[in-house]
Image 1 (cartoon, rainbow, N blue to C red):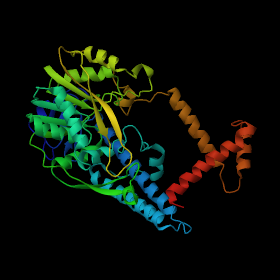
Image 2: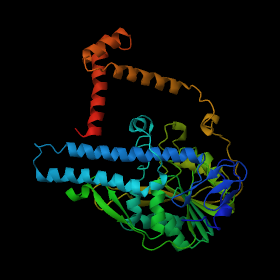
Image 3: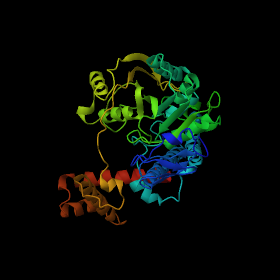
Image 4: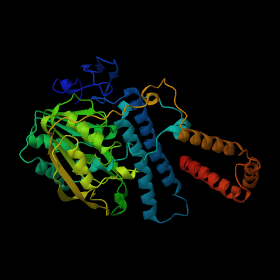
Length: 453
């Protein structure tokens, strides 16, 4: 989808904040609460608090490109005169060049996100880390799996969903958590529903999907986990789709926890590799999927069902999954298992085979949606932020670090700084010098990464 919002999709959309009707063309406005939602890279940006969400993803983009630039500096710094082996020098040069070029390509691809950047020090302090659960790079290998590596993994994923669906032929299909977009592309081409809507929250994956659906070419680097040879350490890959997407396939930015659709909009919802990674309870997600389906609609869930939540109560067994799904207004699921390759890059010696669990269940009755409103201080940026214990502890840690950094004046030694902290009763004498040394060593390492020295 690029340009004006399709007339086939607009009636399905709702405000993710209040479920009000959305109106507009190049931007969407909620008729109930008045919030306006822009198009980002030609796709409706239907995330709650849309301006704040854009700012968060800009920070993640800056964090990712800064990380790549630091990696490039680290590789260049490793090219010391005493490193004389040609193959080693070639590998370091390749990685330095690729990291710098990859940062540039990502910035160009995600230019629609960009605004005037903050100071580098501010981003370093406040921007999310690259490896965050919802970072831009979290599922980056998927873009190569979907559009470069070949058909084995894509066809295995498609076959699992088709087996689960059986004779069901969707007319209005939703793929919630579409990633880089290959599964909805294949389902739409084969099942030929009147409309398929693919939804994700990650701008990098969605930017790639949009260009693939339009039969464009995108060149991005792959950095294999276990490269097969020197040249495989960084490969500039050309992402392409087999053909332009069939008409009726649409992309929408949205959050699975607050999907921007009217109740009963779809007769089939597919959640690929989603239910065990999304940061919400399975009971809530199952009820949300139920609300999106028309009576008698079908939910297809596929993935490993590997719940790694920190809360032990939510690390569900497959039997618990079956009970939860049946309790959310669906028939009891019958699980189908298949062994599938997973992220098996042809350039890497590292690959996995996963036992993928898939089920398709029919909606039998409506489910009660859980009411878990966002705290007012998160929903409204003007609302006072409560002084939570975690915030107080973090603030104290920042003050201590700031105090230690202020003692570095070019004259004091580590022993002098440690003695000062002992005098202030911040550290015990036996541990002070070692702790100060560890902290200053971290600062030194960070400075080397930034400067490449």
